[in-house]
Length: 615
Image (cartoon, rainbow, N blue to C red):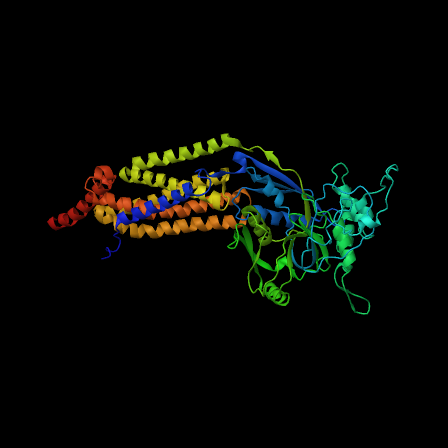
């Protein structure tokens, strides 16, 4: 049987609160690194700073509009919820990113242009190590290119393979032993006059190979003009229209030049750690010669048939068929139709997912794919961090500029622990004043207020730790200020309830009968006041940036937790106190003066009519 209106079973509410607290702290100690500590912001613990320098295809300074857009996108990537405490500042043509803690590698990854394109695989070949390069000019190119859509077999020479150690990296030379002239032992070999890779390169690639070799040498940095030329020559070499099918002046189809494919693949350097000059600058309408992310395979790719702008969402998760992680990609309606039609017409052919000119995955299409698709990281799949990073850069869009990252550097706390201690002292003083006021004015009800605030602090702490793990929330001084202000909001809820309770007692009701009526009437006011506070916090969170966003977040979160404590703790405790003969004693409850005032008023009202009758 349900209790009368206004009456509750306080034991159930308190049990529910205990269950909530138990679940929160079970998550705190059972997940993450088992350290029950919230993350601190830059101003309290310091962080890592990375500078990203913008570069354009022509070498000219980037426009202000493109820099602003890049700053917004990078800020969204690093601080998508607005509460991780990261900062992105524009300094000339350089973006300075500061993130809390030692997350320098993550900050450097934020400069990825994240241009995802889907391209057909025309040719693929295994890459060879590039640490030791030949010291003599190579002979003329010979041999056949690999079969389209399949990796070359180990028994036959192909693009990206060599038959002797003297062959240039990545070039076929099956008849090298017969064609190379024999030099008598007594005659020293002539010194090479130029890089053998330049000599091996086709005419369209010679300038690119020279500039790429110079760019890879830290002792000879490229000028701004040379950087622009590197991109131009790179496109001329690696995006030659003859690498794929083309049409002549009469409109007839011209097949791909497989000899040119083998030559360009041969001069492409896939050594890890190099920055591809075509990142963010490749032409999607032309073929592309590219490496995979591990530098283990080289690809000749056709023009893009689907752009990453057609992606609506991307998320990382475990690969159900492997030990690694994968990225699930959802397309917009137009992109989903294009992908479904392409996969239906290219079964048993390979399609490459190309992120910033690097092949992330090149699976063989087994059948038509309608709807979501997945990107795997090859053998072993992605690691969790790799999958999460890729999903984030795909989800938050591509940058209008390419960036060269600098080395990550550690920065000290801007305010330090002294400021944190000052903030905590201010909060402690505020709490102490609230406690003293409640004890003097409300007595037993004041004790219940203090207990409710302590329990509320326990819930807030657990939520802070979990939010730091789940959404990267970091606590800074602005957030601490939000919590201090929230103390007043929580105390206001108690005051509203207790003052309404006093009004009911003044009308002649007992402590026990006044509690349900006072709760019904004060509950609406508490909900309205907290709703206004939460709405103000939400508006501030949406419109603000930086640390003000964190202030709004903590204020809104505290407002919600205030309702949890008032409904599940404060009200049930007051009900229990009203049902106890000892606790409902007027000397303990703090309602004695109110009851005496009410009794005097009733006596006066009773004495008034009696005196009138005697007259």
